[in-house]
Structure formats: C-alpha cells, structure tokens
Image (cartoon, rainbow, N blue to C red):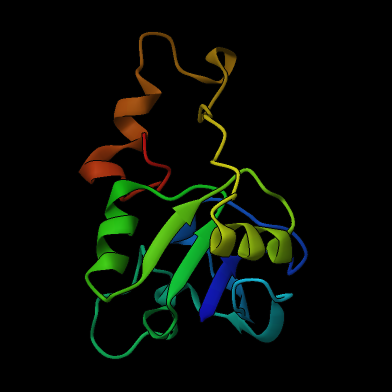
Length: 141
C-alpha cells in the first residue's frame, strides 16, 4: 500500500492537507515497518486546494493520505480518485502510517483557527475561513 503523509518540513505530520505541498510517500504493509520511498515537493498550483484537475496528480496515485487536518472537501475530492484521506494528531509520519494500517491511528485534535484576540470585533472567523464547505482551509470544521 502506498501512503502519502503531509509534511511541510519532511520530519513531522503537518495539517491543512488541501494546501500542503510537501508529502512523504511510504510503502507499507500491515505488521511491517513503513518504508519511505519518495518525497513530493509540489508547486503551489499542485496543492489539492489549487489543482484544477487538468491532468494527473501525484496524490491520486496513492492509496491514502494522512495529515494533521483534512476538511470535508479534501476528503471528498480524494475519495473521488479512490484515495482514503484521514487526519491525525500523531506527529511522527512513520508511526502515523503504521497506526493507519493497524487501526490505531490517533484522531486529529480539535482546533480553532484564531484565538479570540486575533479576530476582528464582531467577526466570525469560522464563517470566513470555512467558506465553500471547508475548501479554503481543509480542516473539517
């Protein structure tokens, strides 16, 4: 099974799957240690958030994508291409892949986009950040 893990620094699992441009790609089987086989360093236009489906995409060639957060739009778009997308709180990419395979992957922690101090008075940051069914941030809220 080929699994891509969002990792902007190529060391830890990072969030916002739809806007991620860097991924570690693992070959893995249940009960075996995942083996990193590739790294994706995509152009901004190739993030799933920006991609216009005008050709093949490297993420459509994997079986699953793991990220720190993934919104409904991202999950749906990946599923349309036969790819399972999941979010996790696990920071280590190889551990996340192993957990996904054996069914013990820690779910993503709930989060907020901005502290109340960062929001403009009277604004609802959730409405602004979650237009178009979460496609802007891909966090699932």
